[in-house]
Length: 147
Image 1 (tube, one colour):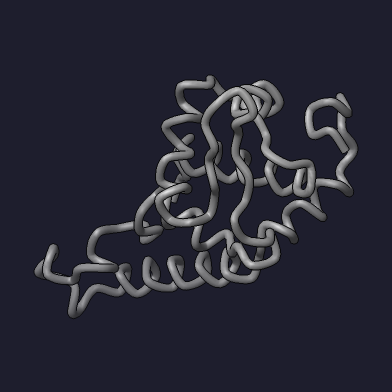
Image 2 (image 1 turned 180 degrees about the vertical axis):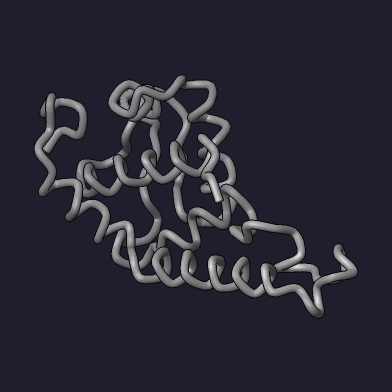
C-alpha cells in the first residue's frame, strides 16, 4: 500500500501539533510553512481531524488549532484510517464478494496478512511516540520543528 499525500501530510500536521503541545493555539499557516504543505491543502486535511475530535479549531485574530487529546492517546492507526480509509492493499480483503476467487485465493491470504501487519505497526505507535522519535532526529534546520 502506498500512502497518499493526504495521509502523509495529515500525520505530519498532527506531529507538528504534538511537538508544539502546550504552546496554545497554533496557526495553520505556521504548520504549513514548517511542514512545507500548501495552506489550502492543510485546511482541507484539518477538517476531518476536527470532525473526528482530534483537533480543535478556533477562528479569529487569536485563532488556530490544537490537539484535543494528549498525543499519547492518539494512535497512528486512527489517523491513517481516518485520512486514507481502509489500509487493505486490495478490495477483496475487506469485501470478499468483489472477487469470485476469494474463497480459494492464496494471494488474498497474503493481502490479509499485510493489512494485519500494517495495523499492528500503526496501532503500536502513538503521536507521542512519533514526537519522541522526531526529537531524536538530527534536523537540518531547527526552525522546521521548533524544538
